[in-house]
Length: 393
Image (cartoon, rainbow, N blue to C red):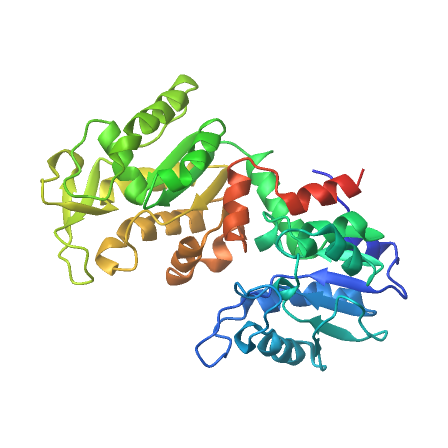
């Protein structure tokens, strides 16, 4: 995967006197009063901004505003305040910026929510050309939006004099490429979630590549049903049993496997106070609901992860929010932390599990993009990456 890198421009000293436009991902959560409740994305954007040195323009989307209709809750004002604190210098917020931006050498300005601009989401060439004229160098440092072709993620990269990937985007692509394109073997993937349908394309794409495909959550229930096991009242997609069988068969033909749970943790109701009962997978009662893998299954899977050269993790294998149904996810998280293999993890629930079990510094790479991470796993080319690759030719 060949694309121009911001780091190469820095090394070649090609930024002197240049106006740099950075598309960051500053879409942070806020409370009802507009206070930022978690600022990881803002902190992650700082290295590229510091490295740019000269006249720097930064923009991002925030939420889902209606184009052309400004509302105070859609403003990046809280982000500008936090960015000012992190950089130790005032970061001015600029509205109505598509016709021109006054930014002095050594100054950083934040351009108001880019999704307020008419034509942003539809990737308008007219808008993209206007934005491209604002800068000498365009830097995409927003992996979380790389799966969307919008004016600030795709269009501008067509028309800017120079277009490159920032440090965050480059690191994501390097880590994902290492995990999926040149993996150390065995390659083990954990794909978990409530529905097979939402991750069917990912499961099929990985079934062609991985040595072990660990399924969890409601997805595992469908695979258990496909293997002839009873699952009681558990969440399941019975209409996708044939798809699950096809994936099992596809992997078996090339000597790979989808490990089916041999024991499970059941409850009678979905509740934080539900009583957890460990059962053999063959003994699930008609009124049981499966909420986690059992300790024998967890130990078997942990042993597979211990031998893995590469691990891709997307999704907790049980209802880990309730501690009595978190044993499986905790055991696999610890196995990933202890593994000598390269690991990459992504997805909101996965990040929550990583934080809960305190293994953040033990995972090889934690992806910042939910949808983009999933689409990369599906084998799709991300539009914002595709245009950078075209510009590198």
